[in-house]
Length: 232
Image (cartoon, rainbow, N blue to C red; front, side, top):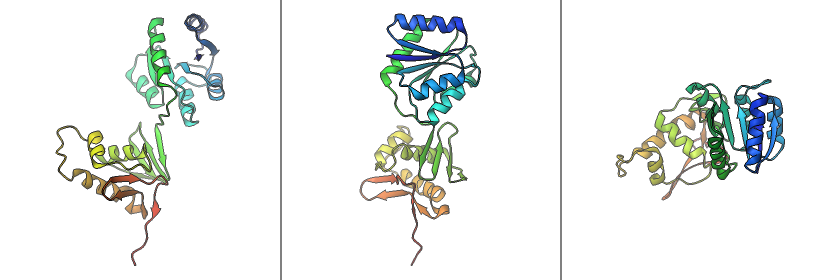
């Protein structure tokens, strides 16, 4: 297993390199944001240990750039700042886990093992389906340059469709993931919210993207929508 450590404080970098090497990892070290980003973007690592405060640009920016480039290596961020806002920012930028300094090396090793078991699974924070764009961190949606204001439930449905473009999702599946167990499955609440979603993401733009598959459910076209035919 090869791990990249991006840490500008020499003592901490040496400690991490030594500890990880003792655990059997091959370890590379970068001392600033640009070098860390360059290494992670150009070489295959099993995980990256990434400090938040770095010269050049921050660990947040390193992580954001990697995810924007489609690099899904697991990232464990290290921070001396315990602020909730920092952790939220890092996770929204695509980090997989956080560890606050000072920490015990055994905990870092355990967190790394857990991340490596998951592997480099794509987890984009911005979903794109045709000209539909869904920011999962901000919970906002656009078609082209036009922002679309959705209710919480409409957004939940759209994100679920956007994570599986082209796949048919049944009413039962949508219910299980977007409503709690108190929901009465015999009601037509799913259909009502689908109609509301269509009225916002399709109709104003003259496209059809959210399709009904008769007898099966609904799907979001993987091309983002076809032009709606004008009435005869």
